Length: 391
Image (cartoon, helix red, strand yellow):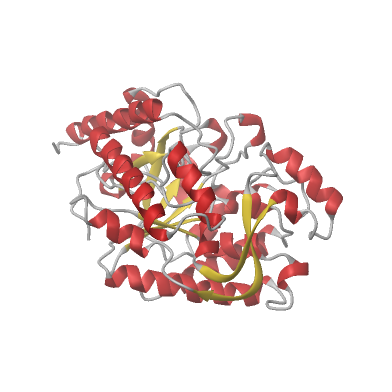
């Protein structure tokens, strides 16, 4: 499906945006610039993101998500029936305002700055979500491309606010049906265009697994809505994802990214816990690869992945995108060797734990440190190829 070497180096998705891109994103949301000017600015930024990856020796590249204000709220500009709201604005509509305020304090984010997509009408895909981004990048590189999309559970849960959404979608199940249809439409368009690798981002699954239905949340915007029991929510998430990718196996590689939060450099506000409670649900998902945060001690032991079905690939997180400390080649190699006890080398991809710029105005690292970390992954991949007899 992809012409790649053993232990390929890839990205989770995002890279930091320049001041020019951040300004353009804001001006576009306010209708102050048109598509032509915006595309020119972010096109240059995308090519810069590509050059950084090429310099670092990345085998499977992304567009750096340069056209997105964050990894999932950008859909508001592509789908009718969605309104972008700051977390401060959402406070006016949630039912339990006191609890919501406590959650905002726990999140360690600027509530007035971060925006969340909220359903305020019937959903309809106006134009492609990421297809044009893929086509642009395809024109400028011969390398394999990974295209990233927000997952169906993330979108469904983050966008449903009862007082605003109920008249159009009385519950999350009804909203989920339309989210699935929109993502399938996008997936089929990408497949037709020749896209061979798609990753769905569902970081909020960790929040579901590691906190109870009414515990204090510590995660990003998508975790702020109420949830049922973890079992019910994870069943719902697996069902939504399987419906999105139904019939796509063999046409493109599919991946799912899960982490424990990537909006802050403060370890104490991020989630922790091994993947064990998620493995049964991973095994139900019709996905080729799981792209997992594993370079931080908060992720628990790699041995928790032993029970993952043997045909599943792992995109192993081998560097922490939030720290200025640059990992060593030995650190990466040793983590990969720990996984080789449970996976064939051909099933292991190497990537950072998360993206480097989940939110456009809140990157977690500098381009200088990012380049160093990607170089380390590349050197480790070459060492591993040599160890396993493949140069």
